[in-house]
Image (tube, rainbow, N blue to C red; front, side, top):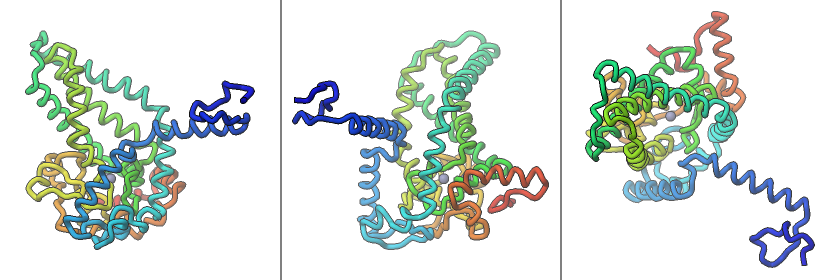
Length: 354
Ligand SMILES: [Zn+2]
Ligand SMILES: [Zn+2]
C-alpha cells in the first residue's frame, strides 16, 4: 500500500509508489508539455498537420510525384516520404534556426502582446466611432443580417490585407526596417515554422498593423449597428480560418500549392509566396500581400509564377553566410543599424532594391 495516497498519479491504477524525485520530474514534464501545447502554432497541431499531409499526398498522386521543391528551390520528383518530409529541408540549419527564433519570440511575446493588443484595437475602434458620429451624427442602428456580416468579413479581410501589404512593402523599402525583416528572408528552406520566423522586434510591428485594421473596420461596423457586433465578429473568425487557414500554412511549405492562373490574379496562392522568398533579381519585392492579389496588382508588384518556377530561397549567396545562425539573425538588425548610424552603408543583401 502506498503510504501517501496524494502522491499517486491518478493514471497509475496499479498503485505504484512514486518517490519525490520522480514526482518532481513528472510535474516538470507535465508543465513543459503544457507550455509547449499552449504555444504550439495552429499549423503544428496534429489535426492540421494530418490534413496538410493529406492535401500534400493528393498533390503527389495528382502530379505523379512532382510538385515539391528541394532545399535548392528546384522542383523535383520524389517518393511520398521525401515529398512530405524531405530530409534536405528538415535537417537544414535554416530549419533549426526557425525553431530557435520561434522559441525566442514566444518568450518575449507576453512582454508586449497584451499591452499592445489591449490598447491599439480599442483606441482605433473608438476613434473611428467618434469620427463617424461627428461626421454623420447618430448611428443608423442597422439590423445585423447575413449580408451585413458577409460585408463585414469581406471589408475586414480587404483592410487587413491592405495594411499587411503596406507594412510589408515598407519593411522591404525602408533600409532600417529591412534590417529587421531580412530575418524572415534569410530562411534558406521553407518549413511550417518559417511562417513565424521573424526578428523579435518585428512581432509588435505586425501585430500593430493587424490591430489597426481590425479596429478600423470594427469601428465602422459598431457605428452602423449601434454597437454589439460580437455575433458578426464570431462569424468573421470562422469564415477566415476556414477559407484562409491552409492558404496561410502552405505559403511556407516546399510543396507547391497553386491556383488556376485567373484565380491567382485575385487570391494569392501559397506558391506565389515562394516567389517572395526567392533571391533571384526578378523576384525581388513581389507578392507582398497575405491573402488577396488585389493590392499587389494595383501597386504593380504582382508576380504569377510559371509552372514549377525555380525559386532559390534566402537572401542570396553573397550575404547569406552573415545571416545563417541563430545568433547572426538575432543580432543582425542591431549590427545593421549600428553600421547605418556610422554612415557605413545601408543593410545590403537584397536591400538595394530599386
Ligand atoms: Zn518580405
Ligand atoms: Zn514568408
